[in-house]
Length: 137
Length: 137
Image 1 (tube, rainbow over the protein chains, first blue to last red):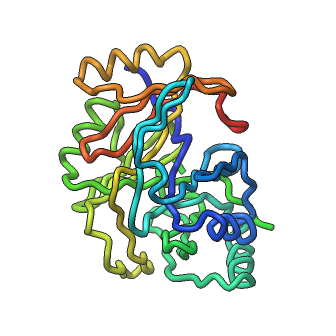
Image 2: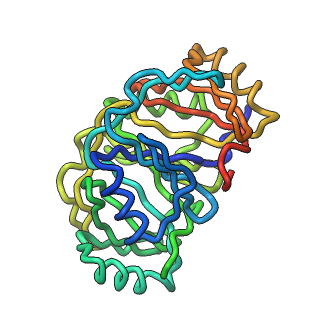
């Protein structure tokens, strides 16, 4: 049986790409790899790609000389979780506090590791987690 | 500035956890790391965690002795992309075909790499991509 090696792309759908970009770039320190009219793509730690799609802009199949991309879109406060070093969690709290980002929840996981939760401008629930909670993390 | 190391968790919201689990386990070969009444978690290549949430089951803050998890939820055919080896893309097509999963789109990326697109039982748009399309993949 063939194998899935990792999740390359994780997508969020946002109402205002400029507003979302300001948050992810200025407050979370991300750098864009690609910017189109309807999609910004960010490198996460050299491992994964965070895609920010303009909500409603991918509801038609996109056909080009290279092939076709079927429709997708999303609503609701989605959830994604980023890995951070345990030694950097305090620095992240300071960073977020300095940028006026409120910590909305905290967890100290049974299996190990800690998490803090906050929102992006579209209400998506973002989590920063230190290692220990998952068999693979 | 502290650093985000990777995306640990990517979440999809599904109408029927059992139906979704059958798809991800039998057709994509994933193994669950955690199963609760409202959440199944899958290891992806030892690198990432795919979370399948029962839609509507996480709309209240979850408080426990360990802390609190704020609300989240999602609608719509979301998109995620899995990494596969170039040498295994043909085997994936065979695997999906044998399980009656229709290939809905294909791309041959300008920068390198190829993708195939298909749907899970909730209509989420899944992609299998071979390396070359992103600076970090």
